[in-house]
Image (tube, rainbow, N blue to C red):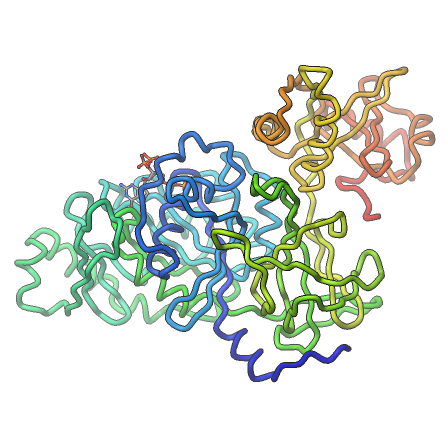
Length: 540
Ligand code: G4P
């Protein structure tokens, strides 16, 4: 193991003050607004602007691009790092498309906890449910922010109840809204029995002044109005002890969700929520790794630096026009220019030009600690899932790939743009946006795009047009399932397949059979015993 020149105390301190989290929500619940307000309270931006460009940004690769455009600052990134109250927070972006994409899974593999934003008028929505399931699979602790209390919404008891019923987890309110809709004016902190009343600021651009008081304050009824007051007293009685009943160890396992109320746009309840993140979200935790066939637990405070690549993205910044590989630091201290073992390539590589990602210009960094994300300009060195180590090569849990369910034949409208078209496809595939399969029919060979969610087609076409200046047409194909076969394409061709089954190859030359129905797949399995039809390709 290579020696790293720092004291272990420093590493222990840095790990304990790190909070790495992602925000998950159904589109429009307020993820972008809450992100912006967390940055406002964290001091990373001074004035928040309503995120007006969002509607035009539906196909943007990141919701943060909307903030970037409206704020005129550059958030060229997948992670926002900011300091608050002595803590160092890393907020990971989860893509905001309507559609569910693999990118989200990958980001959630790099996070230690998640914030789930709900719209108080809507409660649990389809995307919330799906993202929650991914968190559950990975035992990621979740903190819930019920947003838009300034709008007429559903009964708060109903919403808490719905979380429990729909997600089959415990839900514990940590604070309670005072008033609702136009009368919403603050939250009651159930653990400290404190009333927090906020003042509106112009367009919620700056921090909302807060008045702190007790429930028995004689002026409270006058201040908040008799209706809000009697509702609050009633709720406080019903909820007595709720905050205290919060079980930390169940939260750490993702079995219970603490619930907070607020209005991101007005900054109501944002600060108590940020404080709750510091208190509740766990610091980087140990991870299981494999090394030389053994599995062991690696502590973040180990003196071996390790990390893994969870995302690759091209053209994040038009000025740079390059590809960035995002690496989550899992243990030890990262130092610029250090030599590490590349697990997949089985050789030493030097980690040059590491970037921090929240800045007007990309800033190179000298050090990073567990929980941090570093960006590397990727000269083809990294793929998603690659891991590096300053000691013996390691492999973290594989990031699952999901079997594509939608297929389409994509063509460049202008033949003269063929070269850019190919380059775009290659780079977007490297990002893991989609898989490119090639179907050989007679002398022709056509690229088929395979994606998990249908909307990815629109995202791809829009990116090809804007980033590579290639207009395309797409013809959706009737296939529904793809199965990788551990044989060479010639051997696959001699298998007995249903008449509509097609054999394609992926970009690594592996054979993939495309089926139009589950029935066709069953038929192929029955006719070809001894051949495994796999939902994902085997690793190289
Ligand atoms: P998302 O990233 O989860 O998709 O949601 P985003 O923050 O973009 O918010 C979606 C809409 O909800 C936006 O309105 C935003 O202003 C609004 N919103 C966010 N937080 C609150 C809140 O606390 N209260 C209320 N009433 N609205 C909120 P929009 O009409 O799409 O955009 P805009 O015209 O307001 O910019």
